[in-house]
Image (cartoon, rainbow, N blue to C red; front, side, top):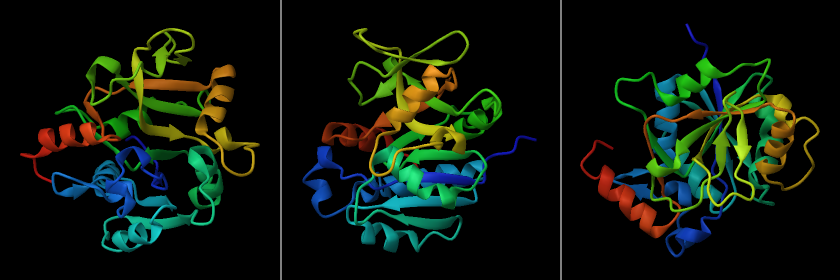
Length: 242
């Protein structure tokens, strides 16, 4: 029996600038796609995997997110409030670390849509199965670039034969896109700097130590960070249950 982490960090504090003017009055995680908010779709996946507790950080229009989350009774929700200062991805997780505990935890961007391969055990469970506490500080769920719906960027990482991630660097393209879904252990945040900073700072440190790995996602993943990506996801999901 695989032990799925009981806790997840849900990154919901972003400004959603690429989706303006939609996000001028509604925070990006509450934007609806095919009748269900991005945040609820994210929490649905966590509940399905067996996660019991979600730490959700808030900043832009955070009161709307706080109020919206009172409707969820299937998972415990704890708010990490960044209303006074947006801390970026790394700083947000570092601030929430006392709420996350000492065990490995999921970290999920609240503005992504991923669906698991039918008949599979689920990507979050697959991350738990593949995670090696002794060898890894982080395990990233990666989408093959050619199967990244709504994404036209050059990709983020390649995968070594060992499963370790390799930055695209000076290469024109990489084979994989980071999905915004990962499994981390708190030691990744050791000696994290104060204030706002990107998770990429900690990724680079873990890569240098040979402790950042990737897992290929076998299902579908959609980039909904732009109006065109949002429209594509709406079309794909329109006829599916919310």
